[in-house]
Image (cartoon, rainbow, N blue to C red; front, side, top):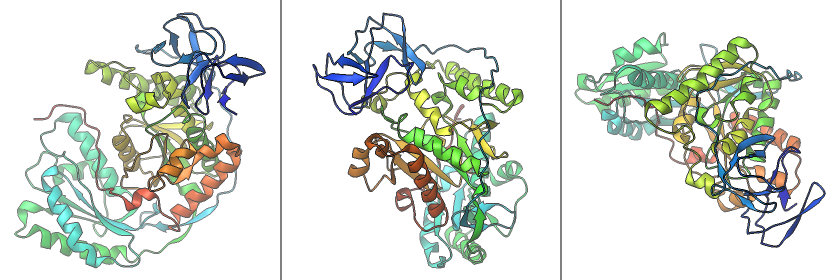
Length: 493
């Protein structure tokens, strides 16, 4: 198979390998003569498309033809334009079927005293403000001697925020930090403040709410003569607390998995994102939860999600999610369709609709059960939508702050980044998997080689259970995962 028509309604096909001018490709029983070179992952017309007509992929429009396009021609940014740009009105036209329920499996996780579950048993050191980043790093370094065999790691995190912020911008920082402090992958947490910052510990506690003082400790550097020694002393005490936890059998219905894509290519919607969608259905059918974010990468595919909303109330929240994010773009004078990135385009994605229709496939087919504000924790079982941008680090940290135990991150280009929770990289093509085995954990490109998606989804599901049990680790866990990327939206004083 050298080219693939994804849906019978499509008027384009995707080259699964590079095609040369003059080659004849068989699509749906019809011979198509390629009129110009087509890179792997890129699209070509399988019928004549007139200027202004819709270009169809995944059975939906991905934009309009800028010029007349002949059968066999390459379709990309030169002859295809996005149709996005307006705030829209929507009607609720529910179209979903509940998944057949299955019995949960089990994994070995950590049951916390508040009933939550973690898949790692770590001690975290979190700064309220960027001014103390060097301090938390030093505390991390001198505290490694307190790590025991039952503690998976002692990690400090850093970010540039926490001061000189106003209103909702500061509140975003406080909500994100609170989400990390509450995260059950951390058995214990030391929060380190400077003392004079806007988002000081007293302000943070207002957003954090109730906490267990045995699990969460605070230190203000300006109050200490030797903040590193005092911080290490507290970490020693927190390690004693963390050392008391042991893995035990936990039903897979308690797993929360974040869904994210980045550095996509023309295969992402066909292989990796589609595979993750099948995984999501498998986990949700067993009572588990998944979170889909990257709101700008829902633009152009939002009606698919809206019509999967469990009820009218969730539909209205999804409409607000989409239109409020468009208003965010407009507030700063930016184009709503200012996407995809250069790497996406090089991989064969031409418009935001093209990217979005592939992106939303990560959520599978299950009903949408809830919509979460940035920094809000998961409340419902099943699929939730989360307010956050498309930026890889910011969106992944947002998923973690909302309670994701781990993140399935699909990519056609590759990336080494990690965030505080295990970040599993899934390649859309096998060439990337073979080239970057130090980055990539799982190969969805097998689908292009004939592996059945359902079988590969079961393999991914078993992989996630093993990872959640600590039997294996994501490649990102061995790389630098220290940065907290927080969604900034406002004035810096």
